[in-house]
Length: 440
Image (cartoon, rainbow, N blue to C red; front, side):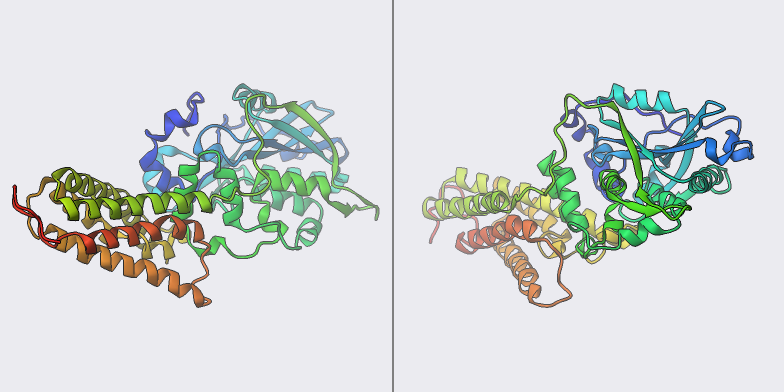
């Protein structure tokens, strides 16, 4: 079991975790461990009476680091007569097993913990902490308590985590649904507010660069319509559902699922998660036009004057573009080929950046140094191919199977490919010898 490190500001941790971020992109969860419980609680040993039990959902607001941006949740059970309470956390993970984690085999487990130390830990991180007392009948409380007590046993505690479909929040959703005899799932079968991608964008908007990175890495499986049941993979959406739903109890009465909300702590340093994803497409388009357009302009400058400074600048810009986009495309390709991260398979963004883009790195360095006379010709061929694949990715959007919502990425990277393609069409096909005047 890993022990959480002290909280640090997001930006101070991003560089140190840049490589880990891609591997962690489909397992972003606020999983903070607590000590495993010792003796069995009375509801697990059969000592508790159903009428003495209380159940509650605890939701924790987003934290600083990437896995905690989504918030977290746990379920609690208490025996009010015997004054015992436990919190059940399905977000346990051992980061010593990073290799299996990176390959997409996300082995998580559930553990129980004392309630107050757990809540105080999150309060110490200045994260929202709310306790939602569930208005379950006695049989529902007994059913939930026994379900959780069974799940925490060594033979039942492990599960394969899926960030969107089987996580620390969906397991709680299922337990609440069990307690009300399947009525929660039936009530939440209505259409959801937005897609998984849109939810992802609004939660990751705290750091736009990471948000765009994650957007690039994921395919069209997160663009399909959702139900409200599906949306409860997010602790905040599960909390919303619990607050709004009613159910029919054992006495035949239709009652609210929520009894009351107790606020343990309200963050004083964090802005609330936006209700809608921010529209960054215009900004990404401007950035793409600026980067691709500047390459074309520098190429015109070099073609007209033959100045070495223009050649060096264009070479460095080409090398940087090849490094960033080529590395990103290569990582996503490897995630598709070598791992079980299904949301990275068949990613349309590989039309825009792929392992072939990496060739721009050595060729850009060669251009900057002026070492190979045929480098501009090779770069022209490379960027014409990359421009063609980018346009192909756009053109295929007319077909139903190419329905990935990657307009943000297209707005950013299509102008880059076309700009560099135009640059090397305009550039002389051989680097002029030192002192020579290039022909146009």
